Length: 220
Image: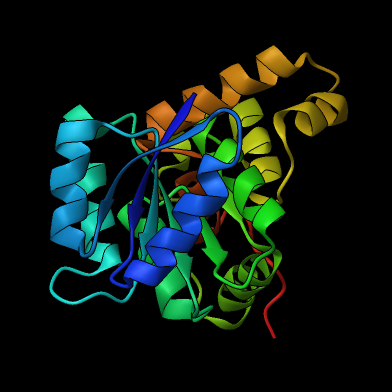
């Protein structure tokens, strides 16, 4: 059973999400919050598996709430899936750097939302295709990283190769097939890299890969 906390300042949106999720086997809505402060407090009390987090809310917004949740050791098992009407660069990068595990636009199909909750609950990263294009575009057009080698020395050559594949969007099974190793070995390498780089999950690993220069797309 995946336990979900709904965070949105619009009661109608929360009601819609609740109706959708409670109609599915294996999903349970354990609580709601109308702002970021309430989200943090509810996480401390309820310890949900996944938080569906709106971005723009009065008081503490979704980005700052995500940052506070990610910073608390006692909430290490809580995954945040950002839901917003806006696919703007600033939201994408702020959410991922704050510790969000995924980012989905509110106009996504209900089936996509349900799959996203499952992906994030498993500890994997999820970015909507449009958001992925935005993320890569930013690193293609932006300035080079200030220190391209930062952090790379803690990874083995094999780990760097696997992190690069993660950043290109490959799953553990796809990485295993590409490198002719078992999916379990691929997962072990990914987890070891996240531990060494102090990345909360695969989403932050992707950000690190670009910011460190491990992934260097051709710049326009």
